[in-house]
Length: 138
Image 1 (cartoon, one colour):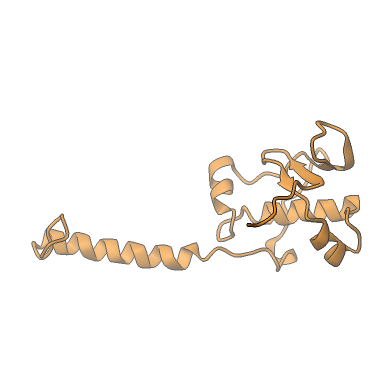
Image 2 (cartoon, rainbow, N blue to C red; image 1 turned 30 degrees about the horizontal axis):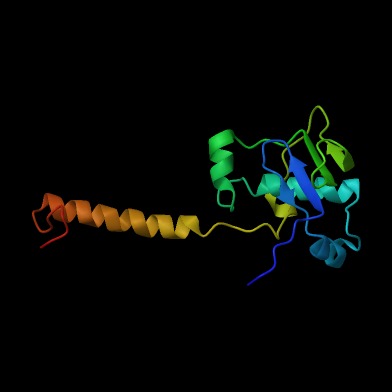
């Protein structure tokens, strides 16, 4: 059986559930287990880009609108508010340009969605023509 570990640090962002802050990834990619405020801001902006149409968190952008969280903080897991590092959005901030974040994952959804729509359209035409019954039997 695998071993369960409680993360030492968690990331909190407005409008999101707490996320584990992966210290091994941070050490390898940022050079330290905890980010600077600027690196935390870059993480938040990449998250915002991920809510754009065609990206992996598009469903969040559709449900809640594309907005910049007003804060992001990293804290010790289990503590309520004592942030180790905190970033706060300024009163006015322009949404980031997706071209500035090429590593944000794109969603494969549009490619599959169009194939599903075509298939459903063909099935509806076949049902209307009497070539296909609603229960799927010919």
